[in-house]
Image 1 (cartoon, rainbow, N blue to C red):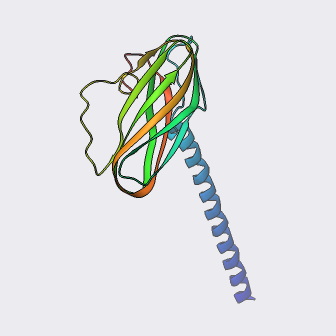
Image 2: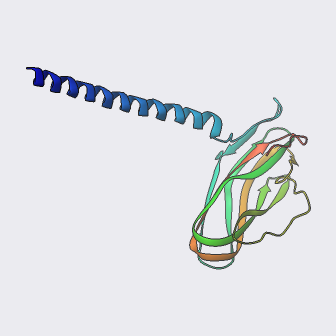
Image 3: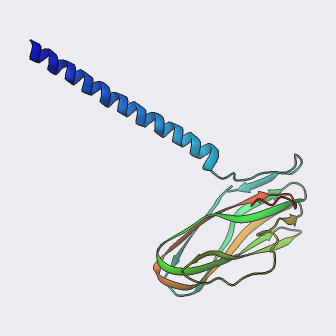
Length: 188
């Protein structure tokens, strides 16, 4: 009876430890998920005044470009719609840019915002550079480096991406989102 009682206690003790370990992993997973969603996930749209509304459809733009040549250009027409209720300031910056199977590349872009009343072009130099040099741009680019004043309206968004000095074959993956900012706001 002594040996059976000891084995039974050992099995119960091991089962308790395994269950406790599973519970700890579940709690860690839930806490880390909330942490990511609250602190790490970028805000898609923000407004600096209560009278401005920026509605974007979709709120985050995802682009994928297959690279099979040393240099090239790819256009994406009407990839989003931005509705600006009142005159405000817009900043367009990439959120994530990554690549696979490329050992070198330089990527730049040009964002086009077109409405019935206004058109804006936002140059986006050096979105990504991997083992290549990037020309130094000494000018501050409205809409990319600093907020661009944008009139109210419904804007169709298109983008043209260009690359150079690519080595290898692979893909570039890019996500970006517009943000409203005051002209004095230094954050991107």
